[in-house]
Amino acid sequence: MKPKIKINSLMVKALFLWLFCFSYFGVVAQKDLSSTFRNPVLGGDYPDPSILRDGDDYYMVHSSFEYYPGLLIWHSTDLIHWQRVCHALHKYVGSVWAPDFVKYGKTYYIYFPAGGTNWVVTASSPAGPWSDPIDLKLHGFIDPGHVVDENGNRYLYLSSGYIVRLAQDGLSTIGQPEHIYSGWEFPKNWSTECFCLESPKSTVRNGYYYLTVAEGGTAGPATSHMVVSARAKSPYGPWENSPYNPIVHTWSRNERWWSQGHGTLVDDLEGQTWIVYHGYEKEFHTLGRQTLMLPLEWTDDHWFRVPEGIKSSDPLIMPAGRPSIDGTALSDDFSGENLGLQWQFFCDYDPLRIEIKEGKLFFKAKGKSFSESSPLLVNPSDRRYEVVVEYTIQDGTTAGLCLYYNEDANVRIAVDSSHFFVFSRQNSKIRVPNDIGNHGYLRILNDANEVSFYFSADGRDWTRVERSMYVAGFNHNVFGGFLSLRAGLFAFGNGEVIFDNFVYNRIER
Picture (cartoon, rainbow, N blue to C red):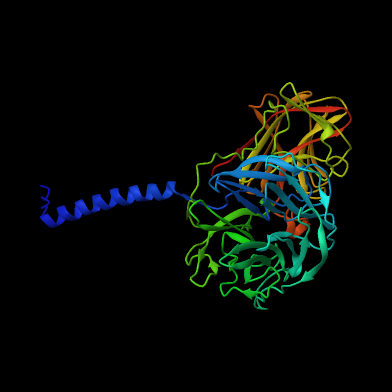
């Protein structure tokens, strides 16, 4: 005989309290989940962000280095979901480093360093068309940052604490750069890459000129990079360093985001200030420096800081803004009239090699290696993903799918009329006879930096090439260049390769 359970009033009250709490906090949790975001706000290799608010719209641009066309412009209305707008740079001028995106009057400007000097491009709309780059003849400086004083005079802040006057049209300089700021001295025992005073960005508020700079070096140790702030009553100083420095910093290699730094401030539609910056994800330097964002608070004595207890790896309350659509997809069926904005060449910018017609990409073959033939690349944003493409080759051509850091650091699967090949760097690792002819499919699976290669006759039944690669070392700390491991297409030899149905899929695990 089972014992009877006596239910008293205290148990009933406890039950109702439990049900209430479960229901209430479940709803709150759902509400909080739908009104929060997690970093990164733009995954993949999007370093040195410069962000501009223009009314209810936000525009952002990043370093584009040797990827051309360069200076990809992004648009958002909520600071979280971004869509590609256009490329502002179509003329090769060298490796493009940290830009500054500003609006003055009715004109949009992007100031940027490349090829040992500094340049500017202009447009009447962020969507372009953008002008050809104009050389400002500022040699030996990087990371220009635009500022306007109370009388409407224009200046550029430069690396190492310099400033130079701009002509009123912003297209040339007046006089020579002057040294005005020596930075914030962080403790000597901190583990950093260098002092590296760079990335000067300006915010004018509360009667102060705020200078937001980067120090510590952009890579190297996990704790290298940081965001530092100073303020003055004049663009020339004298400068007072913030008591809250560093504003952003990675304190331990146990954190998810490493080498956090290079910040730009922006206000949302309700006046909340945010700092947009970059960082490497721990164990995934191959993805490059990703765009991150944190809220700021202003103190009573007019300094800004990240609120206590807020971390870049935490869920964060969404900014105020209109809902925006995510436009970061990388797949391409080549049904448009032009090549999609997700694609870029590396170094050898030659748009005449490609043609979009009949819903396919016709890619002129060239050379025998990457040093002679640029790949066409997209910018992955995930730890685990696959890329697939359909190909048709002519005799004398080689089609391929690659993961590419630079000419020296890459892995790839290639096919010609006789064989399938897998390469690591410049060395052939394995070859398999081509028994399916000149049309088929290639696939690369990147599972947290462990890479495997496949081919297929129909895109359904896949044959795995037995050799796998581990690519975690293909990053800036090993090969330099501030680049990332990107996925893409290549065409070697003579004649033409036809590509179709390029698919990028994130792999959930």
